[in-house]
Length: 307
Image 1: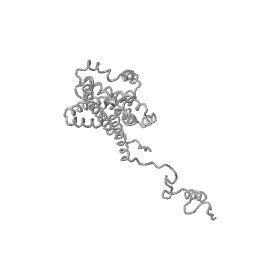
Image 2: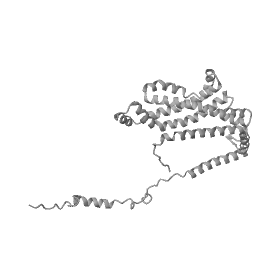
Image 3: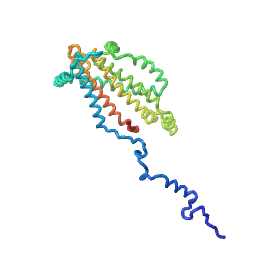
Image 4: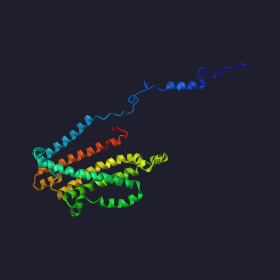
């Protein structure tokens, strides 16, 4: 008895020809990567790579524009709601800056301010992150600590100065304490927010795989909260400079805040602007260093482009 071959099947490949033919038609209809139309040909928006040189040129041009406006307003004595009659021109400020840069006392002010910032900010980072993680992971810790955070956080740095002078033995320690408070609260609140926003599905998945509480904390919760923590560190650095200057103005002997306030009392208007610009430059530099130092902790983030 002979068996007739089934016309539906191909003897070489054993693939149904009735199924293979439509599959081949679909494969032929799908364009290959070499023949597929590009995003621009299809009318889709193409993501442009950021031109960092052009962006920095725009930022420099914006600063130069503000410098020109400042010069025109100060040289003409502009007085409409904002009075520029007593504001020195950029040229006078530049001449005074050259004089200050040749003086060792100016650098002494910078060194004292940087030392206070470094000590206070280090304490704020350690205690702030630890406190924020505890509050974010434990309801008991949050219920106990949060009332103190919300009670003391709105108090400005200037209001802490008399109590700090009475409680602490030296002016240096009182200024460091005031600066610490300024940086502490933003770091705590951002850390709590980041820890609480960690997706529960990740925690449950790690727990189902047998991860311990310590492993979940180090490998799931903290990495997930790191963007918010880094934002708190950057904000805390800016607030730390604000608090530092408030303390130096009232109870300091050296520092950029003391330099700026002394220039005002001695009616040295160019030195006032020098102190302000120095504060802004140092604060920007410190914030940039914080972001650069924390960048390796955020390497897992996807880089999204902006138009």
